Length: 286
Figure (spheres, rainbow, N blue to C red):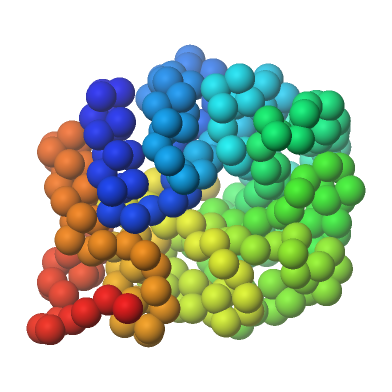
C-alpha cells in the first residue's frame, strides 16, 4: 500500500471516530519493507487532534525512532514461547528482558511530557503453534517481570488464535491478581478459530478497556504458522453497539474507510460478517 493511501486510510478511520490507531512498526526495512514509512505515518497521524498514535517496536533502537517521530504509545512484543521469540525477534527470553530494561531506562530518562506509554505485549499468551501449550503460570510470571523491567502495563496477545473465553477470563484474573488491574487493560485477539468476538466480550466483562482489532481482519504473524488476521473492527463495533456499549464510532464512516482500504489493496481479501450481511433494519448505535 502506498504511503499516501495509508494516510488517507488513517484519516478516514479518525473521521469515523477511532481515537487510538497503531499505524506501523519500527522494524528494519529490509525485514519488513512495507513498514519503511512508519516514521512518516506517525508524524502525519500526530497532527490529528486527540488521536493516540501507537506503534510496535522490537528493541531500543525502534523505541528511540518512535519517540523521535512523536508516538504516544509503544508496544514491545515479548513472546511467552521462547521458540516463537527466537523466530520472531531472534532473541531468547533473557535477551528480550534485557532489551525491555534498556527501553524502560531510556523512556524514564525523557521528560514526562514527551514520554510515550510503554506496553509489554505478552505474545503467544494462550498457546503457540510452534511450542504447543504455554503454561498460564509462565505468562503471569512474565507479566510481573515486564512491569518490573519498566513497562507501564502489559497486554495479553492471542497471537495464534488459540484462546477460548474460559481461558481468557482465567488468565486476566491471574494477571490482575499478580500485577494489579491497572497494569492490564488491553488484549490483542485473532479470529483464527472463530472465537475472537466471544473472547472480546469476556475480556470486557473482566474490565479490559482496549480491544485490538483490524479493519477487514487484516494481519497475522509470519512466524506463527496457520495464524489468521485479527478480529474485524467492523464486526467488533457492531457487536458492542448492539450490546448498548457506545464506541463513539460512526458505522457509515467506518465502512467508507473500508472502501478506501479495498481500493488501495485490490485483490486482498477483506473479512467481516457485518459488512457482508449489512446492518439490521432500523439499527441505531448508542
